[in-house]
Image 1 (cartoon, rainbow, N blue to C red):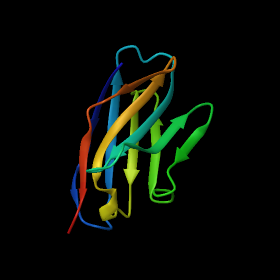
Image 2 (tube, helix red, strand yellow):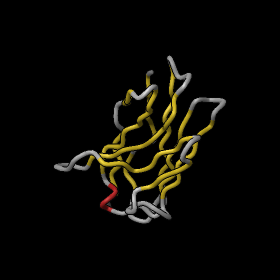
Image 3 (cartoon, rainbow, N blue to C red):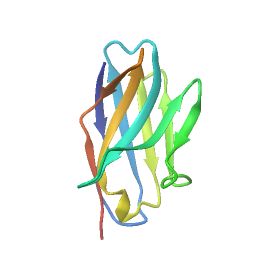
Image 4 (cartoon, helix red, strand yellow):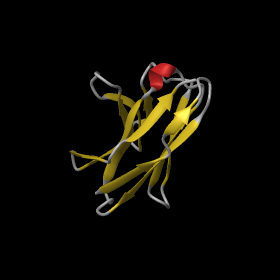
Length: 114
């Protein structure tokens, strides 16, 4: 499975960004799609996941501000990020789980700063 994330950039506090992740390769039987992030000096953390079995799941820190969605026809998962805060600054990684194996894309940097 190959994952290509895009959409990161510089945004002011309170602004919005939408991240996209396109999957290719052996995408059949992917059970979970998700976004994780890693801020400087911190561990990678879950942001949001989406699956048929469990629906959507969000970190408490982004609930009500971020929305994860998936377009099945294009094998793309999105992360709509609204009301961005400086603490959202991080490298965001796309993730899928297929047959119990985690696959990761290269990250895309999101910087929230005035």
